[in-house]
Image 1: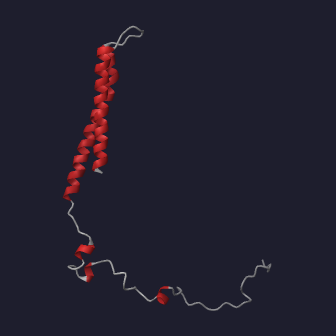
Image 2: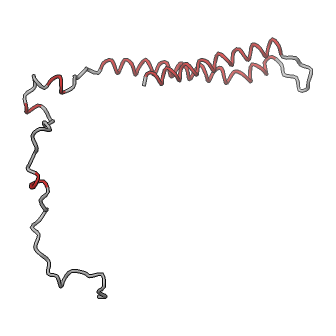
Image 3: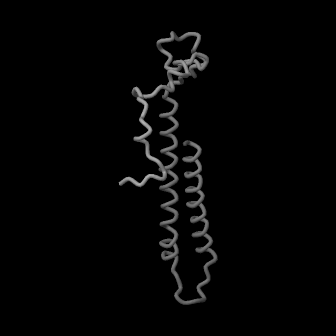
Length: 131
């Protein structure tokens, strides 16, 4: 999560920086030979949303990353059960070992209710035409 937030804030700051560089380049090198000629304030107004948007997105992503990191650091570490198995009593472990089956195989495959044998006259046949 922090890596994605950091990447978003980096991209946003790059966008803001590039828009500032584009504004400076436009102010310094803009040649007004063609009509309509843009004034310096019009150039600033053109690049201002990109700069402001990049800065705002960058700051929001950076602050969000910091909050997510601090929230993640406050979560207590719980080691895996494998590391605790010798210390924990059997009642506190919700996993059972795979070497002891819960029931015998014939018990696991039993029917939900007692099955009675169906008479052969009651079975459907492929050639029969009963409606």
